[in-house]
Image (cartoon, rainbow, N blue to C red; front, side, top):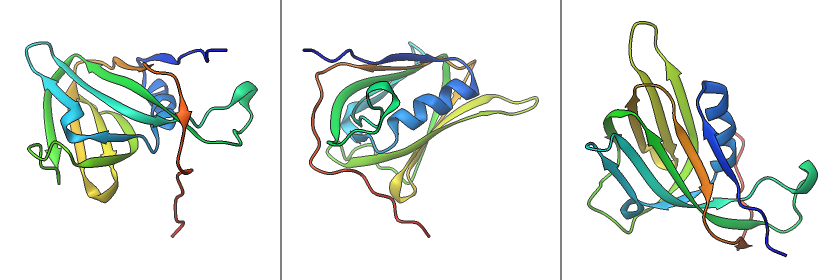
Length: 147
């Protein structure tokens, strides 16, 4: 039986928190990310760890799935601690943060392990997450050391 693919659209800071949680520990190659200023879009294809389980229960075996992620209404993109010409570099996504600044622009920041980040200045939130493959068994479950 095929598993139903996930598709979510985030339009508020609270929505972005949900998408961020679902994308925690996703891996992405630098070459699988693109910013298209003419389309006002940032897009990437990630290997998402499926944290969600059936009926809200935790999964016994971990799975990953390919997922497309894109943000629309992007006015500008800025990178930090990231070399865009190293296409094969694999990044671990920790979170996506949405920020509304009083009197200023809204931002979506993709935060990666190792201090790398991509900050998008956006004209309103429109962040889409869509699974685009069937899941496969993950080699391991992501772990986070507590400080």
